[in-house]
Image 1 (cartoon, rainbow over the protein chains, first blue to last red):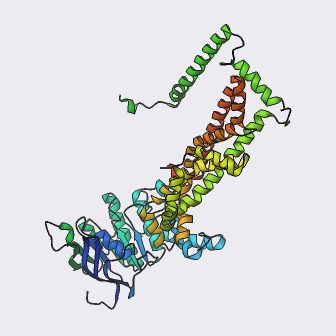
Image 2 (image 1 turned 120 degrees about the horizontal axis):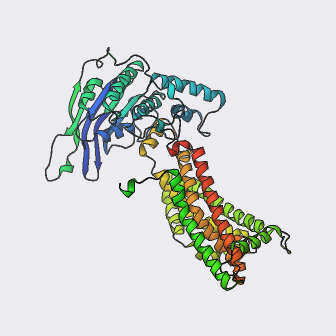
Image 3 (image 1 turned 90 degrees about the vertical axis):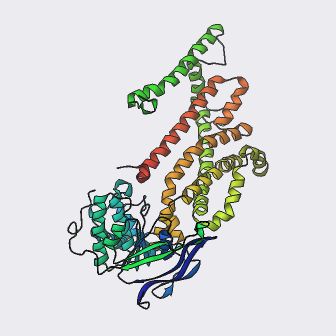
Length: 261
Length: 271
């Protein structure tokens, strides 16, 4: 929390309240560029609320959120990419269509799709992104034809094509089985390094938080009123900077994995 | 084995499904034969031969007044009304359903009105339509449209409204504006549901069509049935009813096939 000036994202005394229920209180957070911040904490400790705040899906009741020094609008925008645990991809678009969509939006505000050369260019760029996440062989599949792991690869590619300032991950690997989860850890670490990403990840899995993160933030309630448990919100109880990037060298597998699972 | 686990093979399903229909036909034939044995000029339960000759006459002899072949003219007139009414309702369902489902201000403005119209029994509107729009084609088409549109609008709006929040957020983070989200995220996912809604609306649409034709018309399947009722002409009524059933099934099967062809992702293909 020292270098407030160079912080990419800062939360200053942020509160989230629903009626008289306090979810988050006094959250102060500075995220520097290139960080991989893991957020952990028990259920109901406001992990997802915090993510929704950064995403712009909700506005804080009190306090300020700054992105690149400017106040954050309470609306989602292309400077923040997101991968949810489920429903992140569009079931009615092919893999290629899902990723190309992000390029079509700014380029075709009225037609909502690209045609001809512009389309081929966007598709080439999307294909490149899909190769980077190991989906080069699945361009024309629909999400329902793919495994959960492949769908999450797609969701990551879809978010990264926008080159977001921050990539937000909401329990992205929570629904995957352990082997695939390890593959995904390798993938996200590689992408984080290759694309110089700033990542904020919410997770239940403490081991995952420490393997991937350069910094781990634990949210919990500091105080507890047994007669009115909803009156105290959660805040950052531990903020652990870990040294350097997480276990760099030994990746489980070499370059783009043919995603066969 | 439990009954809930007793799955039939395709052949057995055909036999099982055909048996009750066949049984009804046989019961009809036996009863009709008995009645004709007692009274050869019985009109209530005509024999297949009687129905065939009555329909052949309607199929081949032109109407002396209009010069049309009655059966085909009736079919065309009814299908045109049905198609127009359902088409208008579908258009409303798509446009209003998308806007109400996707845009909260539109939902707040129009949702109560649509709900209000939906609870009015459409047949109660028929006199108003006849008075306001005359006895011509318009009032019949409008009755069908008003009869089925509110339910379809609400169905599409509910479907669009229940798209996972994550998808909408994701589209926003990809830089999509409201229009792009409607056009590229909501509309394509509403289409299979729209076809489903049309299939479900077909039943009520036929009810409104036949009602309107029965009350005031000079052509149409419903008109013919209610006209020949005066002469107890069951030899025309029964084939006409069977024809209506066949048309309804054909339209339903066609819509289902279109949905599977056009939106394979919505039917779990490939997995």
